[in-house]
Image 1 (cartoon, one colour):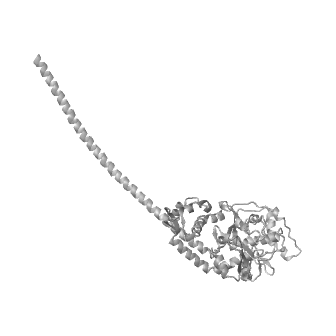
Image 2 (cartoon, helix red, strand yellow):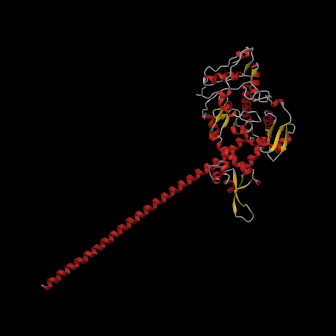
Image 3 (cartoon, one colour):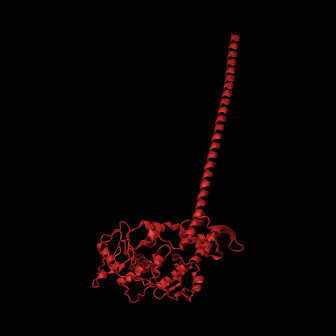
Length: 450
């Protein structure tokens, strides 16, 4: 709804929250004071969202395959003895043997035999298949086309941090979540020396990536960009704010509804804004922390990040120690999934059902990898279908042969029975004949003696 003549916040939608409407008195009357309860006293019960959990479950098999591929590719020569990989099952979270995994996901690797040492026995090795190598070339092409996007993401991660510098180890740990290429430190950072500088001791766990130049174009959050687009569309300045959408059936206590209403009326604080003057326990700092979390999830590929990974940046982004409670406290903005025994923060507005609304261009890499996997799965399904049909035919032929054989056996047994019966009758007639002859002979003898 557009209200002309006043400065208003961007549209904030609510679901299943009765009487949760923004009060614009705070904008019209500067003497109006908002009443806030202490943040620490606000408790929201966690509730399961099956739809968003399904979005995580859908990627489970893809992520498992990606982990195994990554493990093989980082080996010297991109080859590894199968038994070595089998020993890493627990770390890779493989619930089946490597041989079974390879059979279930054909097209990823080729198996060949070689010696681990010159005089050792031949053992099975794995190496990337031609299909996987083609995918890796396609992955490089997508990264090359999206280089500017990757640079802006890396700049944004540094620009939101307290001192505009982050440990290299942390950035390497989150590269998959944000779509950074594996070689970003080797190729991307030196290429854009106007933005980045490596400091410290690389390889010793004490190296850092530092921001060299602040680019104002990168210092706009997703929420601020959305407000600008709405302003251009309507011709009226729109104040940036969060979209607030509770899932169906979810409700808040009256106290919490009032707190959310008043909290949303606070001015939005950009995650790129200097907040060194703010008290860590203030409601403004809570607003800024939620803005940073929102921006981090927006920058991620899947608009969701495991909470433990976000926790690694507590000091860098000035999160409170209990920052994860914000995901349940602001349930209309975030959802914290417990799927797979891992807490994962999900950005609600990024999903429609269990599907992403706007896909990151770098997700094209995932789509290509899924195509590779599905091609192998289809081939395996076809192979199993052909095998089942062949087994069925073999069983039918065997049954038919067994039927013919049984019929021949029955006929032969019947013939033998008839023959035996005739033999028995002949034998019996001969016996009777001999007996009758003996009987007559006996009578004749007795008559002679008489």
